[in-house]
Image 1 (cartoon, rainbow, N blue to C red):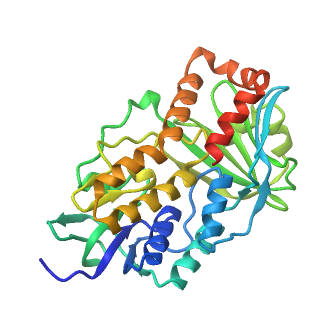
Image 2: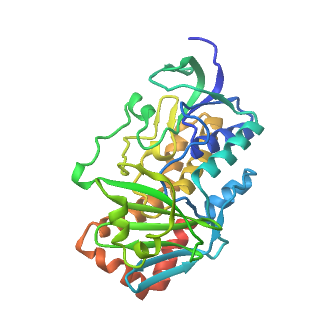
Image 3: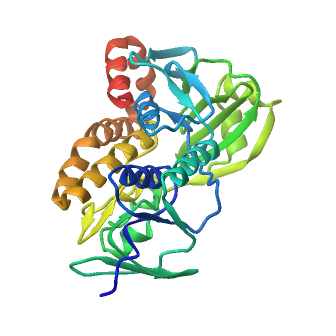
Length: 349
């Protein structure tokens, strides 16, 4: 059975894994993170932190460098719909800057870091043991899988659901451009086949993320976005195009024995509403509270609660985006500003 090497193992050292570990240390747990990649870890994402995520980080003492934005703006040709957040700004933060800040905080509170890849997992009534490439067997009382969209932990504990047919899968691509941000909003440009998210992440830096079907050619797709492609054609590129996906991931449950799934590993709808980190941080809090209480059924209940708006609103928007109603989303948002604002506020909390 063995003596535990830690009270809690967190598999996956991205932002949600680091927040889980930091929160667990605040409750006095001995925590180790297992992650095969070097710091800082980058990822193809929109890089816009909703106001709720900014507040959650602030409570942890984490204030990454970036650029504040006032709200969300939908753009389709000459039609615009926008909403200014009522409870403070969001913040555009390069993923590597966010990761550096969270890693620094995790180190400061005593989180241990183990380098390796989890490939084997076994558990009994008292704990969980993992092993894998570069990793001697490690045992803990509890394990939280925060290892992302393609979670190995999810597979090893039998909670994965078969993916959607390829024709329905959506992917994300992201690149940075060196120019002064022209807007105080995160802009979402809608075209017939893709959504382009433009996020200010520094005084002379914007990130552009494209969401759409497999096989997107980033430069060609961006050039076809009215008003945006022309603006960025001559801008200096900063780094390569990065990709992620498929985005939709489903799970049968969020717990199995003494293992909990948190963040993208626990299931994901789509990046369309841009609130993945806010929801992931809320899940991290719920998971740590459930572990402290020794009641994983509590986590299942709280997971359903904290992800409800994300699942319902995002699923509805994705369904509309895949239907003949797609072309009406931005005009309807502009015509119904109170409804648009209410939806944005629900997602920004």
